[in-house]
Every structure is written in structure tokens, then in C-alpha cells.
Image (cartoon, rainbow, N blue to C red; front, side):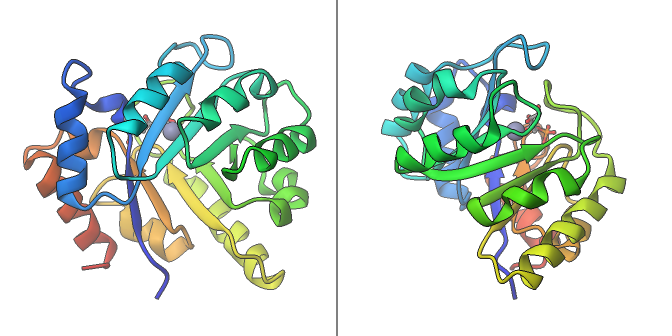
Length: 221
Ligand code: DX5
Ligand code: ZN
């Protein structure tokens, strides 16, 4: 069975107490930390910069999965790579995707490409062989706490079939509105990494309990 990795997005954590949030993610068995970077241009919101990523990563034992929702990854990838293990940019950005992939690859971190809900899989297919990670968005990027558009799970299936047909070793991550009630459907579609912001940080059972519940619903425990 394919592994199930939970990547909580700290966008939904209590930002005044991130040390405690990280401690709970480690204790709860999170597999990575998802860091949502927004530039106020590619998306209508602004979040974290590279110094923040570096400091937070330094106090955490989990891998950092940085999601750049920014117009110009060429300008910022080098600095963000210092605070990341996985670095993802959007195919819809304003830079040349080939150049961004080569830049990130040269920085010694894993290379991810993300695709917005309305971008078809066919646009990323030509890049698949050069990626470590494909991130399929199931909300419009910009904000946590939105409802998942499950119809886009079909794109995960398409990507997984493509990866298998071409013998590619690639992680497929789903990002946006993932929770206990839809995570199994995303597993069955072929995803291997599950971003969860509000489900982990705003649930009634606390961070540790919510991670456990997500893993159980995904069928991994
Ligand atoms: C949306 C971000 C997501 C989001 C996840 O722009 O990329 O990672 O914060 O949060 P939830 O799980 O609340 O949708
Ligand atoms: Zn994200």
C-alpha cells in the first residue's frame, strides 16, 4: 500500500505560539510541516518570508514542505531553499517553469510543482519526469479554511496513472480542504501526501487527536 503522509499547514495554527504548534505536530506524528508562502500578487494574501522559514525549520525535526504561491519563484527560491526540504512553485507563476525546476534542483532540495484547480493535468504532464512532487490544489490558493472541491480529485487519478505508465517515482500531494470525510477518497484517487490546515489546527480533538483521526480515516492506521 502507498504510504500516507500528513502535512499540516501552519497557516491555521496559533501564530503567536508556533513553538507549541511544532511540538504538537512532532508529538502527533505529522510527516512534514506545510508552509504556505503568499506574496500578495500571485494570490490576494501575504504570509511568511524566508527568514521565518529558516528559523522555524531550525527548531523542528520534521521536513519542511514549502508551498510558494508567488509570482516570481526565480527571485526567491534560493532563500526559501535554506528553510525547506521540499520546495514547490506554481506552474501558473510568471517565470519559466523549466528554469525554476533547474534552479530548485540545483539548490539541493526536492522539487515540487503545484497546479491550480482550473489548470488541466495536461499542462504539467510534460514536467512530471523532472519533479519529485506534484501538488494538486482543491481550493483556489490564498486562504486556509475553504471547502475542498472534490471534483478535482480526478486530476490526482490522471497524474497517478501517468506516473505509473511512465514509471515515475513522484509524490502526489493534495492541498485544500482535506479533512476526515474526504481524505480516503483522495487516497483512493492516488495521492500520497495530504495537506491539512483547519482540519488539524481548528478541530475539537486537538492537534494530536486530529492527526490521528486523519490517518485513521485515510486507512493508514
Ligand atoms: C491555500 C493553501 C493551503 C491551505 C490548507 O492557499 O495552499 O495549504 O492553507 O488549509 P486548509 O486545509 O484549511 O484548506
Ligand atoms: Zn498550501
